[in-house]
Image 1: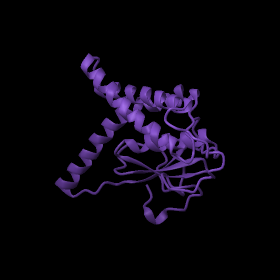
Image 2: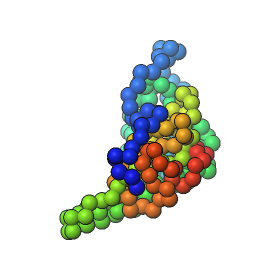
Image 3: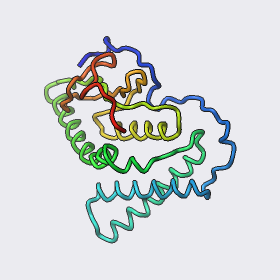
Length: 209
């Protein structure tokens, strides 16, 4: 891994960076009771309920009721926030198969593994003073355009990448179709680890999502 002295600027936005958005055509109401909002609520509820079941690993009725109620509240909040956004959220059914589905199913395992990795690194730091050898890696990712589905996809990729505690999505580089990711420990094996100006981890072709 290269250190920060070798970092090169990327051509795209930082992950989560606020930017002015065109509001033309968005002046019409997208209240919480609209048809699009109902679809958004249902999609969020299914996603969150599935995530709850994967983490809770229980089919007891009381656990399912608790998860359903928690998912309703979270989905309602997500729907209200989406209705106030300057850019509409648009998902595609094709994201429910292939690489996006594999990525979603791998999230619980990634979180559990990275939690152990972080605790192990903390133990080494406290016991021997060993500083984690973190760094940056470039992950192939098709950037896409400015259409709502592409913007929604980048938000989801940023969220899923940053959910595991050992990784953080930093920025996108549209010119190279890569995502800049920071790894705190560097303990997860990755071919081609480098700073943002170096080679792409896992190959040079953008991902199919």
